[in-house]
Length: 385
Image (cartoon, rainbow, N blue to C red; front, side, top):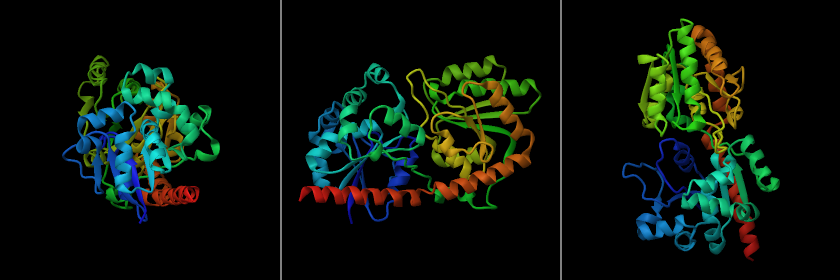
Protein backbone atom coordinates (compact mmCIF):
# COMPACT_ATOMS: atom_id res chain seq x y z
CA UNK A 1 0.00 0.00 0.00
CA UNK A 2 1.50 3.40 -0.92
CA UNK A 3 2.13 5.80 1.94
CA UNK A 4 1.41 9.53 2.07
CA UNK A 5 2.99 11.87 4.62
CA UNK A 6 0.26 14.37 5.59
CA UNK A 7 1.86 17.57 6.92
CA UNK A 8 0.32 20.08 9.31
CA UNK A 9 2.53 22.06 11.68
CA UNK A 10 -0.02 22.12 14.51
CA UNK A 11 -2.34 19.16 14.81
CA UNK A 12 -5.51 19.23 16.89
CA UNK A 13 -6.55 22.83 16.17
CA UNK A 14 -10.28 22.88 17.12
CA UNK A 15 -11.31 24.61 13.87
CA UNK A 16 -9.40 22.12 11.70
CA UNK A 17 -11.30 18.87 12.12
CA UNK A 18 -11.05 18.48 8.35
CA UNK A 19 -7.36 17.48 8.57
CA UNK A 20 -8.05 14.45 10.74
CA UNK A 21 -11.29 13.55 8.96
CA UNK A 22 -9.53 13.44 5.61
CA UNK A 23 -6.64 11.38 7.01
CA UNK A 24 -9.05 8.81 8.46
CA UNK A 25 -10.90 8.49 5.16
CA UNK A 26 -7.97 7.20 3.08
CA UNK A 27 -8.59 3.74 1.67
CA UNK A 28 -5.90 2.68 -0.81
CA UNK A 29 -3.18 4.97 0.59
CA UNK A 30 -1.74 4.70 4.09
CA UNK A 31 -1.59 8.14 5.76
CA UNK A 32 0.94 9.19 8.38
CA UNK A 33 0.30 12.57 10.01
CA UNK A 34 3.50 14.60 10.35
CA UNK A 35 3.48 17.56 12.75
CA UNK A 36 6.17 20.10 13.45
CA UNK A 37 4.97 20.79 16.99
CA UNK A 38 4.13 18.40 19.80
CA UNK A 39 0.50 17.25 19.30
CA UNK A 40 -1.93 17.69 22.22
CA UNK A 41 -1.92 14.78 24.66
CA UNK A 42 -5.67 14.31 24.18
CA UNK A 43 -5.46 14.07 20.36
CA UNK A 44 -7.25 11.00 19.01
CA UNK A 45 -6.06 11.02 15.42
CA UNK A 46 -7.12 7.53 14.40
CA UNK A 47 -4.02 7.22 12.16
CA UNK A 48 -0.27 7.18 12.92
CA UNK A 49 1.20 10.51 14.07
CA UNK A 50 4.85 11.58 14.26
CA UNK A 51 6.25 14.99 15.13
CA UNK A 52 9.60 16.68 14.68
CA UNK A 53 9.36 18.10 18.19
CA UNK A 54 8.76 14.68 19.73
CA UNK A 55 11.42 12.89 17.71
CA UNK A 56 14.13 15.51 17.39
CA UNK A 57 13.34 17.89 20.21
CA UNK A 58 12.78 21.62 20.16
CA UNK A 59 15.88 22.25 18.04
CA UNK A 60 14.55 20.18 15.13
CA UNK A 61 11.16 21.88 15.28
CA UNK A 62 12.79 25.31 15.50
CA UNK A 63 15.05 24.53 12.57
CA UNK A 64 12.05 23.48 10.48
CA UNK A 65 10.15 26.63 11.49
CA UNK A 66 13.07 28.65 10.12
CA UNK A 67 12.97 26.75 6.84
CA UNK A 68 15.70 24.13 7.33
CA UNK A 69 14.95 20.97 5.34
CA UNK A 70 17.20 18.45 7.09
CA UNK A 71 14.92 17.19 9.89
CA UNK A 72 11.92 16.67 7.62
CA UNK A 73 14.00 15.10 4.84
CA UNK A 74 15.30 12.47 7.25
CA UNK A 75 11.82 11.76 8.54
CA UNK A 76 10.31 11.37 5.06
CA UNK A 77 13.04 8.89 4.13
CA UNK A 78 12.54 6.95 7.34
CA UNK A 79 8.79 6.76 6.72
CA UNK A 80 9.39 5.45 3.18
CA UNK A 81 6.68 7.80 1.96
CA UNK A 82 5.56 7.77 -1.67
CA UNK A 83 4.10 11.30 -1.67
CA UNK A 84 3.72 14.36 0.54
CA UNK A 85 0.38 16.10 1.16
CA UNK A 86 0.77 19.48 2.88
CA UNK A 87 -2.20 21.22 4.48
CA UNK A 88 -1.84 24.99 3.97
CA UNK A 89 0.58 26.79 1.72
CA UNK A 90 2.89 27.48 4.67
CA UNK A 91 3.43 23.76 5.13
CA UNK A 92 3.85 23.28 1.39
CA UNK A 93 6.59 25.90 1.20
CA UNK A 94 8.40 24.35 4.15
CA UNK A 95 8.06 20.83 2.77
CA UNK A 96 9.27 21.66 -0.75
CA UNK A 97 13.05 21.38 -0.19
CA UNK A 98 12.65 18.20 1.87
CA UNK A 99 10.34 16.61 -0.70
CA UNK A 100 12.86 17.45 -3.46
CA UNK A 101 15.73 15.90 -1.50
CA UNK A 102 13.69 12.78 -0.74
CA UNK A 103 12.56 12.49 -4.37
CA UNK A 104 8.86 12.73 -3.49
CA UNK A 105 6.01 14.54 -5.26
CA UNK A 106 4.33 17.31 -3.25
CA UNK A 107 0.63 18.21 -3.25
CA UNK A 108 -0.41 21.32 -1.28
CA UNK A 109 -3.93 22.07 -0.05
CA UNK A 110 -4.77 25.79 0.30
CA UNK A 111 -7.42 26.71 2.85
CA UNK A 112 -7.83 30.51 2.89
CA UNK A 113 -5.28 32.96 4.29
CA UNK A 114 -2.49 31.12 2.48
CA UNK A 115 -4.00 32.11 -0.88
CA UNK A 116 -5.41 35.53 0.05
CA UNK A 117 -3.22 37.30 2.63
CA UNK A 118 -0.94 39.90 1.12
CA UNK A 119 2.80 39.27 1.14
CA UNK A 120 3.25 42.37 3.28
CA UNK A 121 0.82 41.02 5.88
CA UNK A 122 2.65 37.68 6.00
CA UNK A 123 5.96 39.44 6.58
CA UNK A 124 4.48 41.83 9.16
CA UNK A 125 3.28 38.89 11.24
CA UNK A 126 6.94 38.17 12.05
CA UNK A 127 6.31 34.46 12.36
CA UNK A 128 9.30 32.51 11.07
CA UNK A 129 7.16 30.01 9.16
CA UNK A 130 5.08 32.75 7.50
CA UNK A 131 8.17 34.72 6.50
CA UNK A 132 9.62 31.56 4.94
CA UNK A 133 6.33 31.01 3.14
CA UNK A 134 6.26 34.53 1.71
CA UNK A 135 9.81 34.14 0.43
CA UNK A 136 9.36 30.64 -1.00
CA UNK A 137 5.95 31.19 -2.60
CA UNK A 138 7.29 31.75 -6.15
CA UNK A 139 9.47 28.64 -5.86
CA UNK A 140 6.52 26.59 -4.60
CA UNK A 141 4.45 27.75 -7.58
CA UNK A 142 7.22 26.67 -9.97
CA UNK A 143 8.23 23.37 -8.43
CA UNK A 144 5.24 21.91 -6.57
CA UNK A 145 3.56 19.07 -8.44
CA UNK A 146 -0.06 19.77 -7.46
CA UNK A 147 -2.00 22.61 -5.82
CA UNK A 148 -5.43 21.94 -4.34
CA UNK A 149 -7.36 25.08 -3.28
CA UNK A 150 -10.56 24.18 -1.44
CA UNK A 151 -12.76 26.54 -3.48
CA UNK A 152 -12.97 28.17 -6.88
CA UNK A 153 -12.30 31.54 -5.28
CA UNK A 154 -8.99 30.37 -3.85
CA UNK A 155 -8.01 28.86 -7.20
CA UNK A 156 -8.54 32.23 -8.85
CA UNK A 157 -6.39 33.92 -6.20
CA UNK A 158 -3.58 31.39 -6.73
CA UNK A 159 -3.66 31.88 -10.51
CA UNK A 160 -3.32 35.62 -9.93
CA UNK A 161 -0.16 34.84 -7.93
CA UNK A 162 1.43 32.90 -10.74
CA UNK A 163 0.44 29.33 -9.95
CA UNK A 164 0.10 27.18 -13.09
CA UNK A 165 -3.50 26.51 -14.12
CA UNK A 166 -2.70 22.97 -15.30
CA UNK A 167 -1.49 21.97 -11.82
CA UNK A 168 -4.04 23.93 -9.78
CA UNK A 169 -7.37 22.19 -9.24
CA UNK A 170 -10.26 22.86 -6.84
CA UNK A 171 -10.55 20.06 -4.29
CA UNK A 172 -13.33 20.15 -1.69
CA UNK A 173 -12.15 18.16 1.32
CA UNK A 174 -15.65 17.16 2.34
CA UNK A 175 -17.21 16.21 5.65
CA UNK A 176 -17.31 12.97 7.60
CA UNK A 177 -21.05 12.38 7.44
CA UNK A 178 -20.70 9.43 9.81
CA UNK A 179 -20.03 11.85 12.68
CA UNK A 180 -23.36 13.58 12.04
CA UNK A 181 -26.00 10.94 12.75
CA UNK A 182 -28.61 13.67 12.69
CA UNK A 183 -27.87 14.01 8.96
CA UNK A 184 -30.04 10.94 8.45
CA UNK A 185 -33.59 11.90 7.42
CA UNK A 186 -35.91 11.95 10.41
CA UNK A 187 -33.09 12.09 12.95
CA UNK A 188 -32.66 15.87 13.14
CA UNK A 189 -33.72 17.15 16.56
CA UNK A 190 -36.17 20.00 16.83
CA UNK A 191 -34.51 23.41 16.71
CA UNK A 192 -35.22 26.40 18.91
CA UNK A 193 -36.90 28.76 16.42
CA UNK A 194 -35.40 31.79 18.21
CA UNK A 195 -31.74 30.76 18.08
CA UNK A 196 -29.06 31.85 15.64
CA UNK A 197 -25.73 30.06 16.06
CA UNK A 198 -22.38 31.49 14.94
CA UNK A 199 -19.35 29.18 14.93
CA UNK A 200 -16.03 30.87 14.26
CA UNK A 201 -12.68 31.96 15.60
CA UNK A 202 -13.21 35.46 16.91
CA UNK A 203 -10.97 37.25 14.43
CA UNK A 204 -11.68 40.09 11.96
CA UNK A 205 -12.33 37.78 9.00
CA UNK A 206 -15.40 36.20 10.61
CA UNK A 207 -17.46 39.41 10.75
CA UNK A 208 -18.96 38.71 14.18
CA UNK A 209 -19.49 42.39 14.97
CA UNK A 210 -21.84 42.69 11.98
CA UNK A 211 -23.89 39.77 13.30
CA UNK A 212 -24.19 41.42 16.71
CA UNK A 213 -25.44 44.60 15.07
CA UNK A 214 -27.92 42.55 13.02
CA UNK A 215 -29.20 40.90 16.21
CA UNK A 216 -29.70 44.33 17.75
CA UNK A 217 -31.73 45.39 14.71
CA UNK A 218 -33.88 42.28 15.07
CA UNK A 219 -34.63 42.91 18.74
CA UNK A 220 -35.55 46.50 17.89
CA UNK A 221 -38.14 45.08 15.45
CA UNK A 222 -39.59 42.86 18.15
CA UNK A 223 -38.03 39.62 16.91
CA UNK A 224 -37.37 37.24 19.80
CA UNK A 225 -33.82 36.23 18.86
CA UNK A 226 -31.10 34.48 20.84
CA UNK A 227 -27.52 34.48 19.53
CA UNK A 228 -25.03 31.76 20.48
CA UNK A 229 -21.40 32.50 19.49
CA UNK A 230 -19.21 29.40 19.60
CA UNK A 231 -15.48 29.99 19.42
CA UNK A 232 -12.67 32.01 20.90
CA UNK A 233 -10.02 34.41 19.73
CA UNK A 234 -8.40 37.80 20.24
CA UNK A 235 -11.64 39.73 19.60
CA UNK A 236 -13.71 37.96 22.25
CA UNK A 237 -13.51 40.68 24.93
CA UNK A 238 -14.33 43.60 22.60
CA UNK A 239 -17.16 41.60 21.00
CA UNK A 240 -18.66 40.82 24.40
CA UNK A 241 -18.44 44.52 25.21
CA UNK A 242 -20.11 45.39 21.90
CA UNK A 243 -22.96 43.01 22.74
CA UNK A 244 -23.47 44.83 26.03
CA UNK A 245 -23.26 48.23 24.34
CA UNK A 246 -25.94 47.15 21.86
CA UNK A 247 -28.25 46.15 24.69
CA UNK A 248 -28.29 42.48 23.79
CA UNK A 249 -27.74 41.41 27.40
CA UNK A 250 -28.50 37.72 27.87
CA UNK A 251 -29.60 37.40 24.25
CA UNK A 252 -25.96 36.99 23.14
CA UNK A 253 -24.03 34.09 24.67
CA UNK A 254 -20.31 33.47 24.07
CA UNK A 255 -19.43 29.84 24.81
CA UNK A 256 -15.72 29.87 23.97
CA UNK A 257 -14.15 27.05 21.97
CA UNK A 258 -15.93 23.70 22.24
CA UNK A 259 -15.14 20.14 21.12
CA UNK A 260 -16.54 19.34 17.70
CA UNK A 261 -19.29 17.09 19.08
CA UNK A 262 -20.55 19.96 21.24
CA UNK A 263 -20.33 22.35 18.30
CA UNK A 264 -22.56 20.02 16.29
CA UNK A 265 -25.03 19.88 19.16
CA UNK A 266 -25.19 23.69 19.30
CA UNK A 267 -25.77 23.89 15.55
CA UNK A 268 -28.48 21.23 15.70
CA UNK A 269 -30.25 23.17 18.47
CA UNK A 270 -30.42 26.39 16.40
CA UNK A 271 -32.88 27.52 13.77
CA UNK A 272 -30.17 28.92 11.48
CA UNK A 273 -26.38 29.23 11.32
CA UNK A 274 -24.81 32.57 10.42
CA UNK A 275 -21.29 33.08 9.06
CA UNK A 276 -20.97 36.77 8.01
CA UNK A 277 -17.33 36.59 6.86
CA UNK A 278 -15.55 39.67 5.49
CA UNK A 279 -12.18 40.44 3.96
CA UNK A 280 -9.72 41.19 6.78
CA UNK A 281 -7.29 44.13 6.60
CA UNK A 282 -4.54 41.60 5.82
CA UNK A 283 -6.47 40.40 2.77
CA UNK A 284 -7.41 37.17 4.55
CA UNK A 285 -10.59 35.62 3.14
CA UNK A 286 -12.69 32.54 3.81
CA UNK A 287 -11.57 29.44 1.96
CA UNK A 288 -14.86 27.56 2.19
CA UNK A 289 -16.20 27.47 5.76
CA UNK A 290 -16.32 23.87 7.04
CA UNK A 291 -19.05 24.72 9.54
CA UNK A 292 -21.33 25.52 6.62
CA UNK A 293 -21.10 21.87 5.58
CA UNK A 294 -21.75 20.72 9.14
CA UNK A 295 -24.85 22.92 9.34
CA UNK A 296 -26.07 21.53 6.03
CA UNK A 297 -25.54 17.94 7.15
CA UNK A 298 -27.62 18.74 10.23
CA UNK A 299 -30.42 20.13 8.07
CA UNK A 300 -29.95 23.73 9.13
CA UNK A 301 -30.20 26.68 6.72
CA UNK A 302 -27.34 29.15 6.53
CA UNK A 303 -27.16 32.93 6.29
CA UNK A 304 -23.70 33.96 5.12
CA UNK A 305 -21.94 36.51 2.99
CA UNK A 306 -21.19 36.24 -0.71
CA UNK A 307 -17.53 36.16 0.20
CA UNK A 308 -14.47 34.05 -0.61
CA UNK A 309 -15.27 30.38 -1.14
CA UNK A 310 -18.61 30.45 0.68
CA UNK A 311 -20.65 30.23 -2.58
CA UNK A 312 -19.05 26.80 -3.18
CA UNK A 313 -20.70 25.56 0.02
CA UNK A 314 -24.01 27.49 0.01
CA UNK A 315 -26.45 27.68 -2.90
CA UNK A 316 -28.05 31.08 -2.53
CA UNK A 317 -31.83 30.80 -2.28
CA UNK A 318 -31.68 26.99 -2.12
CA UNK A 319 -29.59 25.85 0.86
CA UNK A 320 -29.35 29.27 2.49
CA UNK A 321 -29.11 33.00 1.84
CA UNK A 322 -26.04 35.00 0.84
CA UNK A 323 -25.83 38.74 1.53
CA UNK A 324 -23.18 41.40 0.88
CA UNK A 325 -20.20 41.71 3.22
CA UNK A 326 -20.37 44.06 6.22
CA UNK A 327 -24.11 44.69 5.86
CA UNK A 328 -25.97 44.20 9.18
CA UNK A 329 -29.26 45.37 7.63
CA UNK A 330 -29.15 42.65 4.97
CA UNK A 331 -28.06 40.09 7.57
CA UNK A 332 -30.98 40.99 9.81
CA UNK A 333 -33.48 40.75 6.95
CA UNK A 334 -32.22 37.31 5.88
CA UNK A 335 -32.19 35.96 9.43
CA UNK A 336 -35.66 37.32 10.12
CA UNK A 337 -37.11 35.33 7.20
CA UNK A 338 -35.95 32.03 8.72
CA UNK A 339 -36.80 32.99 12.30
CA UNK A 340 -40.35 34.01 11.40
CA UNK A 341 -40.99 31.12 9.01
CA UNK A 342 -40.01 27.72 10.49
CA UNK A 343 -41.44 25.95 7.42
CA UNK A 344 -39.04 27.88 5.16
CA UNK A 345 -36.18 27.03 7.49
CA UNK A 346 -37.13 23.34 7.37
CA UNK A 347 -37.35 23.26 3.55
CA UNK A 348 -34.06 25.09 3.15
CA UNK A 349 -32.38 22.84 5.72
CA UNK A 350 -33.58 19.71 3.90
CA UNK A 351 -32.11 21.06 0.66
CA UNK A 352 -28.85 21.80 2.47
CA UNK A 353 -28.71 18.25 3.81
CA UNK A 354 -29.18 16.80 0.33
CA UNK A 355 -26.58 19.17 -1.13
CA UNK A 356 -23.90 18.27 1.41
CA UNK A 357 -24.61 14.53 1.20
CA UNK A 358 -24.35 14.55 -2.60
CA UNK A 359 -21.29 16.77 -3.03
CA UNK A 360 -19.24 16.82 0.17
CA UNK A 361 -18.90 13.27 1.49
CA UNK A 362 -15.27 13.11 2.67
CA UNK A 363 -14.86 9.50 1.57
CA UNK A 364 -15.87 10.24 -2.00
CA UNK A 365 -13.67 13.33 -2.02
CA UNK A 366 -10.68 11.39 -0.68
CA UNK A 367 -11.10 8.67 -3.32
CA UNK A 368 -10.60 11.44 -5.88
CA UNK A 369 -7.55 12.66 -3.96
CA UNK A 370 -6.10 9.15 -3.99
CA UNK A 371 -6.46 9.07 -7.77
CA UNK A 372 -4.50 12.31 -7.95
CA UNK A 373 -1.81 10.88 -5.68
CA UNK A 374 -1.66 7.76 -7.85
CA UNK A 375 -0.84 9.92 -10.85
CA UNK A 376 1.80 11.91 -8.94
CA UNK A 377 3.50 8.76 -7.65
CA UNK A 378 3.47 7.14 -11.09
CA UNK A 379 5.01 10.25 -12.66
CA UNK A 380 7.68 10.35 -9.94
CA UNK A 381 8.56 6.69 -10.54
CA UNK A 382 8.76 7.30 -14.25
CA UNK A 383 11.03 10.28 -13.78
CA UNK A 384 13.34 8.30 -11.52
CA UNK A 385 14.07 5.69 -14.19
